[in-house]
Length: 70
Image (cartoon, one colour):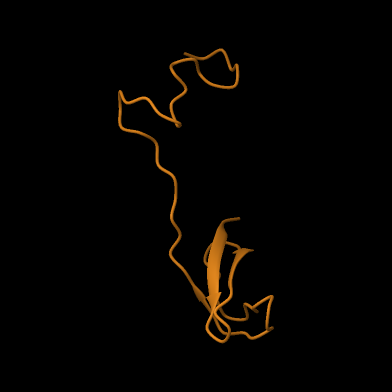
């Protein structure tokens, strides 16, 4: 199940919620004020570095986690 970010339109509180794919924001309650007025927000995500670049997302060709794959 994906994790969605919401913002309450009443109090402005931001929160996350696990939901099934295709479920909307109908009936989503704010954990702070209890209102059912929440808007789904656009989330940011991490992306790997470009090919050939080294960085935090690179496994250095070692396969990572001792998997034995190269």
